[in-house]
Image 1 (tube, rainbow, N blue to C red):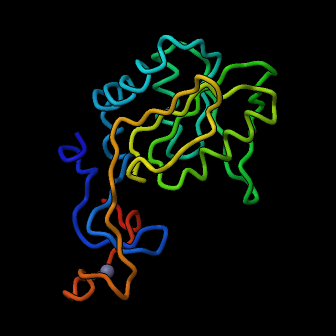
Image 2: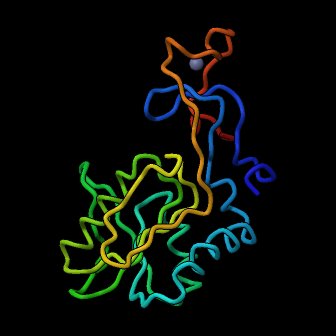
Length: 187
Ligand SMILES: [Zn+2]
């Protein structure tokens, strides 16, 4: 699905971390197709079908599509957090009530920073994070979230991204121009 939709890009990329890589995943490109979105998010939803869940929450921007589709399939209300003045916040009148059981969704997890910020928001409101669901784990299975007793974290796909420091990058040594993904219309 990622290859068919052009979401798996091959080339020479400068990642957000500053490292260079020969591969890049643009999750939004696969999720733009309803059948792919339904199937990938369906894999996540099915992992939590036996778990009582009151609400789904996802960090803007990439997580919103995943949260909305997982929430639709589980028939629970779905919210999102967004970064404002550098801080992740629950805005727009969204509320988590004490005792609510909440599933956190995301598209791509690398270090898990955004997901951990969402977990803090849920916990601070008195909610319980019952799980974390995401399409792509780019940490090679290394990332671990504090999901508590019986909590579950689930990725559709786990990858180990090979990345190099610019001064050691074999693609730079070949003289290939480096591209920042997302900086052009089709990437
Ligand atoms: Zn390079």
